[in-house]
Length: 400
Image (tube, rainbow, N blue to C red; front, top):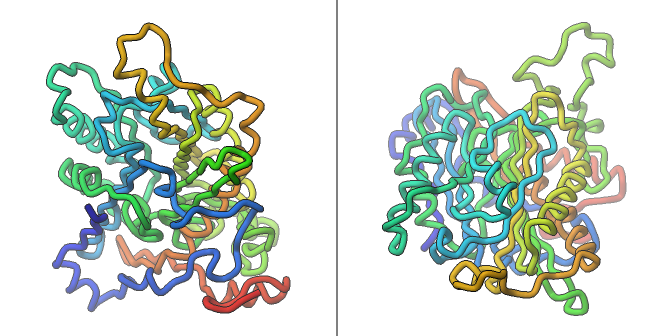
């Protein structure tokens, strides 16, 4: 099934009044198209979390009238009944100003039993209910009496009428049921439709890394929902400073006022980071992997401010570690990768997370939303100009 990006017909009128750059995301480059290729490891064929075998992604984008700018992104560890074939999972919290429903059971039991769903802050509970509906309705779950939905969020209230509670159960079910392998849409789509990053338009971004066969040939993929701030750095280039948009800029120039909630240099917000691998790792190893994801976030210039919710969800799609849940054996089945073999996976997670952030911003288009609020996409032209100053970057289709 293909991913769904539902843009209702009623949007046509709004487009005439306030262009939203819809449909232009495909014309904007990903990081590697302009020479941003952080790290030393190679990406998978789609450079996406779906390069991890079994992983599926589905999205629903809600852009209606002049005030609804939100959506849903669903990540499925595999295509089977996840409740009956739970996967090893872990959660790491960089800063806990946010809502991650279901996290406590994941931490306690070390497993994930539903799709991972991302949406906006005030839609977490409706999304969780939808995940329960989906899980209870699966064949084989007729006697299930407890479900632990795993739902995360960022606050898109600057562009989206978040108080309208526009994400409904049907949207979440649509995202889950439309989930597919292959390329993943990025930028102002799904749960990233109304988000911001470093004062520019943020959104959904993804990337992957594949280890060489000598290190196991495993894949690590990251998908992020960027809605945070700091001092933007792209693969070592001080983009935020060069483009004069960064945290504390005004204060350093003598202004007495603190950054407002919607100002361009406000570091608050949130970021949800989902990391998947096919390496056979259980909860302890996945917790260690999730902690390293914060290092990838740091490379982008993140502040992890007081008002930011920085959450990492990690899971393994390794089928060998799912079989134990179908077994009557009193002991876990399946070999687990030794702890001293995890370091290459740590490197892969750091690199994939960093590049996923860049893709979330580069693929995003300018969005006009609630009350005419506008979040501009980062200018590719300006970015290339900065890159030239550092003898880096090139136009899409060019070379270093």
